[in-house]
Amino acid sequence: MSDSSWGAPPAAGQAGYWGTAGGGPAQPVPGAVPAGPAYDAPEAQQTRPMPIVPDVPAYGGDQDDDRGAARLSGPLFRDETLQARELPAENQNPEPMSDAPQPAPAPQKKSAGRDLSAAIGVGVGLGVVIIASLFIVKAVFVGVVAVAVVVGLWELTSRLQERRGIKAPLVPLALGGAAMVVAGYVRGAEGAWVAMALTALATLVWRMTEPPEGYLKDVTAGVFAAFYVPFLATFVALMLTAADGPWRVLTFLLLTVVSDTGAYAVGWRFGRHKLAPRISPGKTREGLLGAVLFAMVAGALCMQFLIDGGSWWQGLLLGLAVAASATLGDLGESMIKRDLGIKDMGTLLPGHGGIMDRLDSLLPTAPVVWLLMVVFVGSA
Image (cartoon, rainbow, N blue to C red; front, side, top):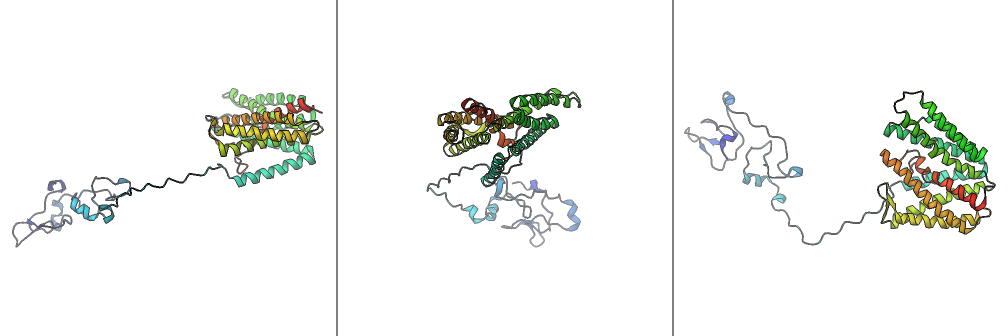
């Protein structure tokens, strides 16, 4: 390496890399280790300043390569011999790699993806509230359904506004949704349809109080929300009006929960083939088969022992229909969430997400169960 690359050598008589012998001309001292340029104070301005070197490690780390091993506190020489002396012993003589086969990494256990203890606790608590209100006072259960509808509408409209800027009017939707459930219980299907129509009209009028920009998409989302949440929930109130209404509602809830549980258990254990990977990557065909088997068995038992005039073969058909509608409902909400770019509709229920994340399979299943119950055993 040329000395000129690091500056001119010091004048005669100076100490350092160029030594003096008896006042004669400066001679290089053999074996001397450079310690940086040395000079007297008066001659300081005749020398070039030392180049500034970034404070990077000499070796190791993510920058371990052959771009030089000079350190800020030492001489700036790329001397390979000196560089080798400064390297630790383990870096000079690395241990040879063993030829023995390395053990395979332990297989990772499947994760449920949620806090199961919290999910089970919340599910049991909700079940107690629902069962108690269902068999003690029917009107209280109708109130529970109305509250769930209002909270579900709030979650849905909030996510639409946050993710897409769609402002579906919540006030007319909440009032109309609660009225829809009550009208279905008091006046039957006719009352539910009238309440649905009035809710849609109120949504259109309420949105007129704001600027016209985005009116069409806002009212369209509002009418969709009114049908998707409160109108479908009204069929639960219609089931409750029958003489054995509480048992019909209980059958509806049990079959939906059993279907979801069967899909989860079988899919988690045996799932290999994706059912709808673009919509819900976690669902498998094996899980769907588990949902069908579990729901059909539960349906046969419920129709045989819980429903007046029901028989086991009707329960098989009912269970098959519930498994299909619950799966489609789950996929439908997954489609909405994927479009919005969210995982859950809310965080109200630990281990579950939001209210809408629990209503996703219940809402489309309610009209299916109501209709089949009417066909099998009548509406009285």
